[in-house]
Length: 181
Image (tube, rainbow, N blue to C red; front, side):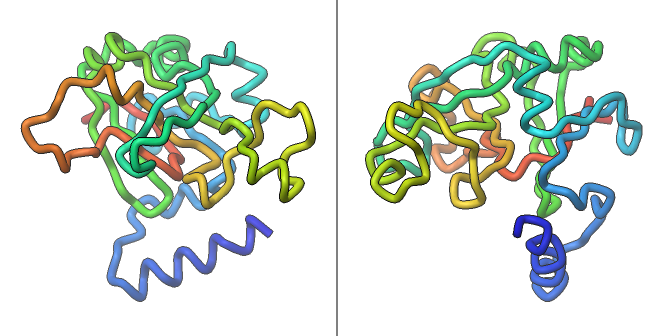
């Protein structure tokens, strides 16, 4: 089912006039870590990322949850970057499936330790609709959750931006990470 979304996303983006400059990132289920644009040093499925790095949980509201706190689980962005020698970069680019790109300052990554979330805490609605079993704590991020990869920050710890509408550091449908050129 998820694979059929790729042509639909590409068609919609082209119809809207959005460039597909990052067409190499055509699989939303694979996260690429690159030494520079187009030079992958690693790639992960969500399951592989969960096995390769310890899980970290962030319970936070987001700019889109109307004050409600949700629990996210995933790998520390800082640890993933460090494993591939990318923590020396001053700026990291996060690229989303729809060609959205955001620049993340390494000094902020060091201080706030965001995660590459691959799971979200099960809600009562998830349990009543059988998305989560009784006793299940987390489930994989789905499209509606902005997954399968979503950079999540501890919202209440972040500095209040000069522009309250600037939420560019939250990257959903993440497909690649690399040092900014």
